[in-house]
Image (cartoon, rainbow, N blue to C red; front, side):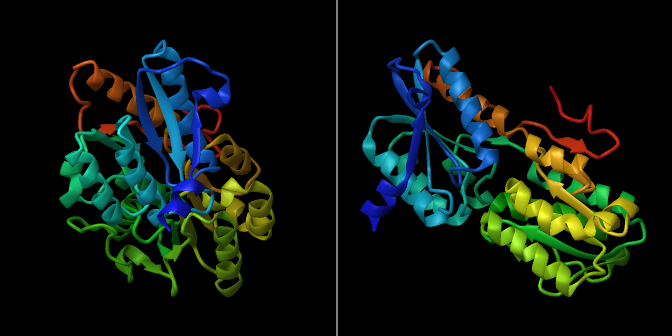
Length: 334
């Protein structure tokens, strides 16, 4: 199984995009999966940092296939550690608990690790140098605030998440639940809403997509067919919108409810294909991250440490963009 997993990984470096420069150091950037518009932006930031380095390092972008996940990602990181030529590993853990095993081996080998997009569990954070990415709890907070603006009296909500073991999505869920329910002092993923401030989670929710985009669209269709009067539906990632034609077809019957405020469909992430859908009336709001900046800053941090500089601030937050149809032309940070 180890050999199969290792060979199924997809590897990209700047050489893939036309650069023939040889690099002194190799820094790996490991997403949860490949062929994902969100992680593609992190890849592009990684490649930009390499190009600007003048050959000081190579960005090796390597991760599980499109439908890969926790086990395959752990194997990829273990293989990177075993190679001996990788001088830094940046990883967005799909399964935070499982990834700790691989990162213990990296720490023992003296390979610095930076988590990005998604962090380790608190008890394992000594295994990495720093986290660079979004304050994930705040994504949930801002999704909930947009929902509250649309449905100030509460209602029934369904949260659609990624993997059940994905720390970043659990933190976003906690932010949604805490904000809608008026709670503090909870632990991730928060406490299910059962009437607090007028909000109740629909039966069968949260829905877990496991980062499977077609599955996420099917979940929405099935849930809405069974619960046509739900007040809010909030994906904690851009899963359904990443396959825009399928998502448009699924949401089309509910555009009228989105337009008149009957359905608060608020989605995480603000990639161009998502903003286009919001402009067309397929969502009521988007709360986005800055994945390009994540990939870029992870590489710069490794370069700085390799040259004897300080580790990055922990955590290093890359900011959020909160978009609605009203501010869509100005909401994305430049």
